[in-house]
Length: 459
Image (cartoon, rainbow, N blue to C red; front, side, top):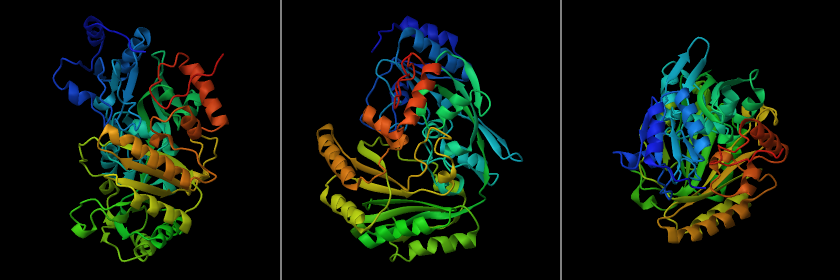
């Protein structure tokens, strides 16, 4: 429901805040309302950049009392466009990005608007790390609430497995300290349950010694053998090694010969968090799969995996995420067949072998319900105009169905605007019911509804 709000109303909100308020008539409005994903041209009544938790509380109270839709943004990477709203309020945390590092205690407090790249660089200066996805510009708060599958997932678990405490502003405007002892139900819910329960303004993470890694980009030719061999090597690798394999057309990168551009390649990221010599041994089986087309795997700081600047373009894409149990020759051939049959400007199938530390956490210990899943899959197709989208949607749906195995599910951070069925796939069975019950306690009016929404359980 869109609520008509007068400029005087926004002016009254502005007067209560320490932070910034950007309205349509203000300079920088179009930049402020933009999000990472293209295809979402939404015009909020205001973009608010709070200075602190007290500001966040005032904005939540304002949105709740006025009935305005509230979009919460950390890095703005929501695949479903939930970082933007038409006619509502965007609560943009980008001015809240302070980091307080306890080097001796190996913990850090970080504000919710800090990006993964900023955090990783700051703690990396002390030879320490926490794992956050694979993209430097993603917001620490957003990726953590959905779980956080990244380059350290097999060695140190999900981002939520390293979350020790949080400061959460709930729908009633209360600023709550949340951990295993205080509001343990809410602490359980925010570890995987997404943005349904409040705005996380600060997070306290465990830090791990990661003075350097053996890692980087490895590009291989695509055959059924290289795909199956890569997954087999990743499954057999020590837990210190996490991998991401993208089967995709070669982009026009300067280190790839022009004759390769547009042809299928296996574009992989490797990250071994441990001893350098052991790391070289761990990556050797991947190099042996075929003569690499490019090999930039080397000893580097962990932060080297997160480039400081990323492309400013807003990609438009359709994607589908799921979990599968294995990648055999049939799966590899299906991936190749579908990728070769599409004329999308870019399309990809991403495969991430899981397990290790992530799998050792009991399945009901957090709201992330896919601890036993073996391989994360993401199928994506990019498009250049709205008229092209239905074709790409059909291709993604067909390939996803062809790849489906017994363990389907969904990783909520990769889910787009796909409806309730997909939300339930991310939170199967008892997990969904438990989250809905907690939602009824902390957000009975569903103020935080612009997300992969879990409505509050009925009375």
